[in-house]
Length: 158
Ligand SMILES: NC(=O)c1ccc[n+]([C@@H]2O[C@H](COP(=O)([O-])OP(=O)(O)OC[C@H]3O[C@@H](n4cnc5c(N)ncnc54)[C@H](O)[C@@H]3O)[C@@H](O)[C@H]2O)c1
Image 1: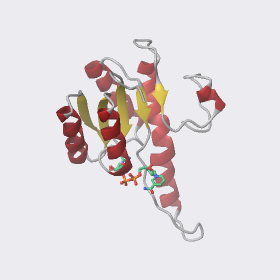
Image 2: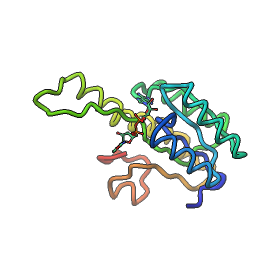
Image 3: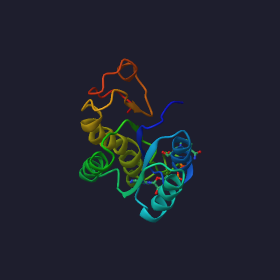
Image 4: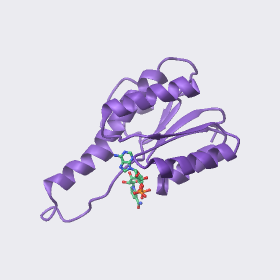
């Protein structure tokens, strides 16, 4: 994977799968922004990337809030001068039988896992399409619109 010198944003990067993605991207030479609702955890992960000699930032962001995502993307572009990769990893689980699942739990999952991906992708794309450097990549690709590199389109998966 050639991500050397690329700027990546990983949401939910403070722990679990997101933390592993951050560390892997850093080990491959990317500069990584760690985004999470838990700033303390995000900061600890970000520090390990700095120890690898890469640039890194930790930002407290609730991905369900578009304004926070927009402020995040602006801050990243200002500090890192580019955004090439967004990994929409932040997610919550409220698994259960649908008969027992509350509407609140359903909405919470949709807000973080789905709308959160929309918010972060939308916010970051503003800077990813500036053409500072040619390569842009997003995780969770799901449709031909992404494979055919139409960065402004909104297919069923972001
Ligand atoms: N663990 C699994 O087996 C599994 C399987 C399939 C898919 N996934 C998906 O992979 C992703 C990561 O899973 P995990 O097991 O590492 O989860 P995790 O709970 O260990 O970590 C999720 C991270 O996201 C952060 N987060 C939660 N809500 C947020 C919000 N609103 N804004 C910003 N950050 C937020 C949390 O603080 C946490 O650091 C999730 O999207 C999950 O749905 C996980």
